Length: 140
Ligand SMILES: [Zn+2]
Image 1 (cartoon, helix red, strand yellow):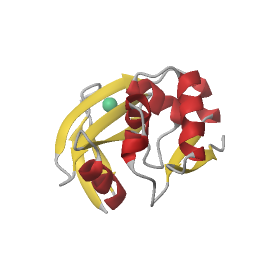
Image 2 (spheres, rainbow, N blue to C red):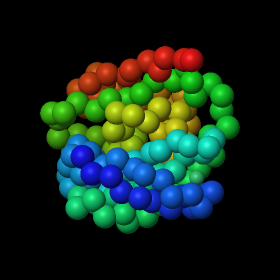
Image 3 (cartoon, protein in one colour):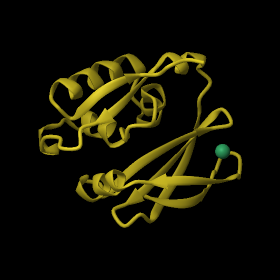
Image 4 (tube, helix red, strand yellow):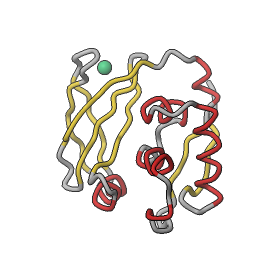
């Protein structure tokens, strides 16, 4: 586990982002060579793209206005998931954002996939063994 500092392009604040081994591994094995880490703070989501060495390659921010985000699920990737080659481009894109902490609504927004569609894709990814679970987010 490593901690890096990233400047949020939306609010200018410097945020501490935790880089775990699974994110680095995901970056190394992804076709783009990058993994996306999503950090929600101050009502928007900071998206940090890191490579397999843990270098920040890009950042972006997206607003999270939807209050229903609290009733969302968190897709948790399987530690030993099947070959990524079996996935469609859209599924790959969604899976690249799944690191076990971000909520699906944020992931869907970041990946540019409508939430309803993302929900179906996430269920499929779970059935195929890419995701270990879709953890319910506890409100409050
Ligand atoms: Zn910010």
